[in-house]
Image (cartoon, rainbow, N blue to C red; front, side, top):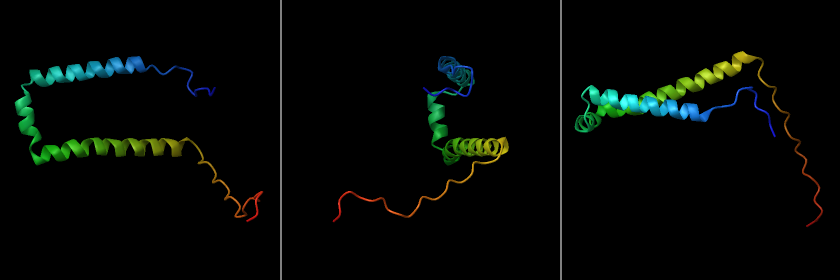
Length: 96
């Protein structure tokens, strides 16, 4: 069995509870601020909102990927390239 690089066990239950709490608080704050489903539907029909809903998560994804690449590159030397496999074909037991 492979061993984890971290001595701490990943706690999915904690993250699930926290994300549920954040979603609940966010929905309550939106309703308290006066955002009703009808107002949200009117807002979602505008082209600027549709572009923002697409671009904000895409931008966050690209930034996260760049951060991971930077972290990997700054950690130390990159792994060496594997040698190319030989071009010889393996011998077969049947000859055609």
